[in-house]
Every structure is written in structure tokens, then in C-alpha cells.
Length: 231
Image 1: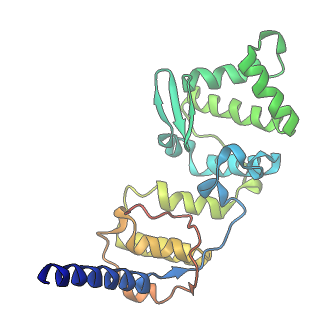
Image 2 (image 1 turned 60 degrees about the vertical axis):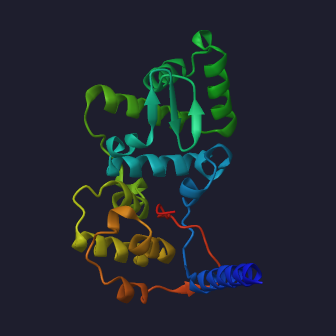
């Protein structure tokens, strides 16, 4: 009898915890920017990023922010690298050099490079891809920042990159500014994640409850640009 009561009590407590957790879940509005799938989508299936004008925008925005700050997202070893979940069994620097050298030169293209450039031509983005590769390689060889064309820069993307990848001198004042930047762009779930679900902000002196009340709630979860890194 005691065992039965214990089991029933555990079940009751388990169900109570589940219900409490469910009732505590809060979801917040999150605008879907044009480039949103760069964070939450599969790059190999992303049709948006294959359009020349979008590649140009992302490239110029990356140049303004600084490619050097983003290169740490590429996990490299001597003969392979990983970027955004995409694994390629080649040396990164050698690959970039070879892609530049083989553009529009079928006589020196191996199967890999022929297929790569044929796909780009089929997508009608080969010239902008070549421009990006050429400028990236130039930046690496000359070890200097690239000049950017401001008319193509997406300032929203640059601001979001600053929040996530340019926070070495993060303090409470900057953290609150980041919160309001996310809120300004309608990224309320991201702003919530900044308050409660990001390790780099966890020690910041913020009035989290007050700031949270400024966010707009919704009934269903939407993927956030600034993802939850605490789970």
C-alpha cells in the first residue's frame, strides 16, 4: 500500500511539474527578416541566398561588419572544414584559391571545380560568387579590411552580427542597448533570449522583469534569430 501511494505521489508530482512548466512557457513575436533563413535554414536548400542581389547584400554587409570576425565560425583542420553544419573534406584556403583560379577556365578544372562552377552558372550567380571569392582571398593575402559598397549593405544584418559576434567588451549598458536593438527590429523572442537564455548576458546587471514586460507575447513559438544557447 505504501509503495502504491509513493508511486501515485510521484506521478502526481511529475504531472504537476509538467503542467507548471507548460503554463510558464512564454512566446514572443519575432519578425522574419528577408535573410532569416541564414540562421535557421538549411544553406544547401536555401534558394534566397542563391539570388545574385542577395549574395551581394550579404557580402557587402559582411564586409562592413568584418569577415575576420566571422571566420571563427569556420571550424578548420588541415584537410577539412565545417561551416553552418556543412562538412567539406578539403583544406579551406586551398579550396578558395582553386575556386578563384578555375573560374571560366574549363581546361584546368577537375570534376569538383567543373561541377561547382556549372552549378553557379545554372543558378546565374557565378559572377557574384567569383567576386566574393576573389575579394575574400584578397583580404586574406593582403591582411586588410575590404572596402564596402554602402548602398548594398543591410544595416539590420550588420547590427545583428554586432550583437552576436562583436561583444568582447560587453557590459550592462551595451547589453541593454542590444536588447533595444532587437526590440526595434521586432525580434522580441530574440530579445527574450538575450535576457534569459544567453550565457554571455547572464551576468549583466539588467532589470530583466521590467524589460521583459516591454515585449509582445504570442501564442506559438517562432524560431528566433538570437538563438537560445542555454539548453
